[in-house]
Image 1 (cartoon, rainbow, N blue to C red):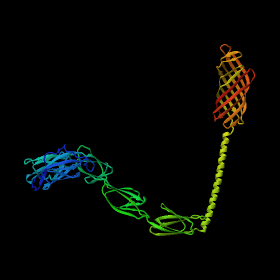
Image 2 (image 1 turned 120 degrees about the vertical axis):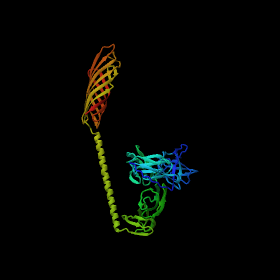
Image 3 (image 1 turned 30 degrees about the horizontal axis):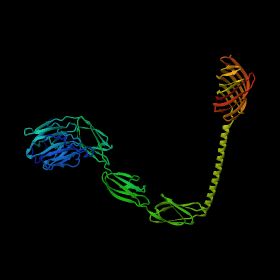
Image 4 (image 1 turned 180 degrees about the horizontal axis):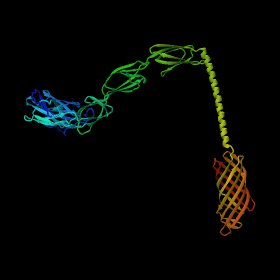
Amino acid sequence: MFLSTITSFAQDISELKIVGAPELDPSELISSERRDSNGEVAAGIIFLTDLTNLSFEPRNGPVGGTKADDGQYFLFVSPNERIITVRAAGFKPLTLYLSDIGVRLKSGQVWKITITGSKVGDLVPINILVDQQDAKVLIDGEEKDHKKSISTSLGTHTLRIEKEQYKTIVETIEVTNEKTLFQFQMKKVDLQLITIRSNPSDATVLIDDQVVGQTTFQDFKFPGIYQIKVTKPGYKAINQTVEVTENEAFERSYNLQKTVASLNLALNPQSATIKINNKDYTGFTSIELAAGTYVLEVSKNGYETYNETFTLAELQQVSRSITLKQYVGTLLFRINEPDAQVTLSGNGFNRSWRGTSKQDNIPAGRYTITASMQGYTNIQQSVMIEGNETNSVSMAFSDQDKQAYVDQQKKIAEQIEAKRIADAQAKRRAELAAKKKRDEMFKPQAFSMMGFGYGTPTLTAKEMTVVGEAYSFGWYIVERDGSNYSMWMDYFTSTEEAVYGGELYNSFEGLTMNFGMGYGLNIGSLYLHGNGLAQLLMIDLDGDDADYISVIDIGLGYKVGALLNFDGFAIGIDYSQQLVNTLDTISYDKLSFTVGFGF
C-alpha cells in the first residue's frame, strides 16, 4: 500500500549538495604517524567547494585538525568512519553516509568529494512514497518527513530509506521539474552476527548508548548503522559509527590505549603507610592512577606525617622519594649500681651504657631496657620513648636478684655436670658398639665350600722335572674351632720334554687326588690354614721314540693357604708339596687359586 500526501511549502534556507561522484585519489597518501584512537593509520577526505567557512563533524571525531587551503579542505578521519556532517553558514547541514555515496575508507587512502550549495529559488517540491509508513527517509543525509512534500533543489541527490528488519535503500535520484515523484518498496532482511573484541578483554560494550555486555561480545543485529562504544577504566574509550551489512559477518577488534598515570614511590622507612585520597596503598612502590588531582599521605608511628597534593595528566609518570622525619626523645635512666651494664634495644635501634645516664636522640617507639651486673640476674623493663619529650626510667638490683643469680649459677653448673655425664655415657656406648662390631667382624665362622681351582704344579720324578697346568675340583669343610677337612682332584697336563728312566717323553698328563686334615686361624671371613695331605698320583708319559708308560705313586705332604668367605662366595690361594713317596720317587708341588661357593 502506497501512501502519499502532496503538499507544497516554501523553504527559506539553501541546501548543500554533492556534485558528481566521490573519487579515490591514489596520488595522495597519509603519513603512518597519523593514527586514530585505536592505533590505526588515518584515512583522508579532500572536500572541494566554491563555498567558504565550511566545518566538518565526523561521527567518530577527527584525527587531528582540518587543513583549509583555497577552495579545498583536508579532513583526517578514522578508517572506520561512516558518517560525516558538513556545515556552512546560510545552508542546511549536509549529513554524508559515506557508504551511500560509494566511499569505502581504508588506512592511508585519500578520497575527493565536491560540495556546492543550492539557492532558495532553485527548490522544488518532491514526494517520496514508501510502503512502510514508519520508515526513515534521508535526502543528502538530512532526515525528511516523507508523509508530505519535501522541498529540495533540482539536480542529483542521495536518497536513503531505512527501517529496522528491512534492507536499507540507497539510491541516487535526479530531480527535475518533470520528475518529482519517487516510489519504493522495502524488503525484509535477516539478523547478522556481530563480534566485538578488545585487548585487554572484559571491556564494557555499548551499542547506541545502551550497555549490552563485555568483550568478547557476540549478538545478532539487523543490517544498519550503529554507534559502538567500548570502555574500560584506565583506558581511552573507543567511539565508532559502524554499519552492519546484509549477508556479511561483522567483526571488530580494538586495542585499548592506557590513559592511567603512574606514581612511583621510594620510602624511608619502607614499612610506612601510604594513602591516596584516603585509600590504602601500603606496600606498593608503583601505583597506577587515572588522570586527576590526588592527596598523598605517608605516615608511620614515631614519624612526622608527609602530605602532598598533586595532579596527574594522562600517561604521566611521577616519582617521589620520601624520607619521613623521625620523632626523637630523651631518656633519663637511673639505677642503684653505677657499674651496671645497660642496653636499650628495639625497632632496629640499639644503644649501651653503664650506670645512671642521660641518653638523647632516641627515636620514638617502644624499647626494652636490659641491665646486667656481676652477682645478679639480669633485670628488664619495657619503656615507651615519646617524641620531643624527656622520658624517665628507674631500675634497681635487689637481694632477690642476687639470690636468683646464685640459684642460676648452681643450675648452670648442674646442667654442665649432667651434660658431662651424658657425654661420657654416650662415648662409652659408642666404644662398646665399636668393639662389638670388631668382634663380629673377627668372630670365627664355620663354613663349607665347593669350588674350582687352577694351578701351576711342578712334577719331579727321578731325574726329570716338568711344569704344567692343573685344573682342580673339590671342597673344604671348616669348623668354628679352626680345624679343616679337604678333598681335591686335579687334572694335570704338560707338553714339556723330559727324560724319565733313560727315555725321552714329550707329553705328560694325569690325575691326582689328595685328602687333607689340619688346623687354621679363623678370623671372621678370613681363614688361614695348614693341613697334612695323603696324595694319590697317576701320571701317563708318552714320547715319540719311547713306549707309553703309566706311573702311580702314593705320597704324603702338606698344604698351606688362605680363604676369604663372602657369605656364599669364596676365593682362596694355597700351596701344596709332596714330601714322602711310597711307591715311586715322584713328587707333585702346586701353587693354585680357588674360586668356590660356600654355605
